[in-house]
Length: 213
Image 1 (cartoon, rainbow, N blue to C red):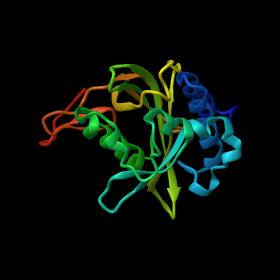
Image 2 (cartoon, rainbow, N blue to C red):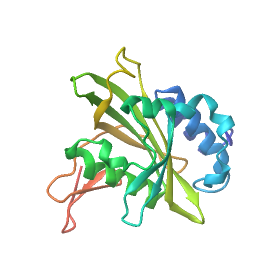
Image 3 (cartoon, rainbow, N blue to C red):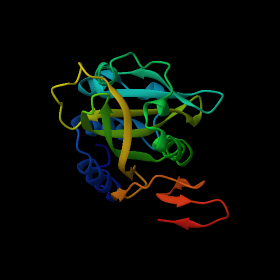
Image 4 (cartoon, rainbow, N blue to C red):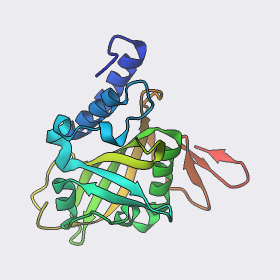
């Protein structure tokens, strides 16, 4: 990683140790290197050849006029988890109903606060099989804005025997933490937003100005 001799670089290195999957580490390292002096790199600055081993677990999200985030690109292993091509699908449609609002809130944090997110995720099949996954979401600049694109990884921490034969039907969030050059990575339990609450800065924000952990 760049700037490894600085205090910031040491913090980035420590954050990289906190992620579990090699594809997550690879993409995060490349994203951090390519951003240079910016908070996020430009979409065109990401070099697929530099993250070749992680491409199958990687994806890029784009924004629709409605505000929904759709897959613009999805790696073969990500598509294989769900048993179909994901390009053009709405990202939060992959999630269980109870976690869709919270997932949209996390995407908003990535886009609006230019902050990375690493999350623990559980995928479940129609037969009831479960797999533990790691999700990485990072902002990208595109045409001058950091809100239009996100790049990420969705990868199983271990590959169960049924992957490729039994598609994942729904994802559920289990934990999340912020990562990024300007943020200290700290694991936090994930609490689903309820009763009109929104996730912001790792807190639940309620209409009326109240905040709770």
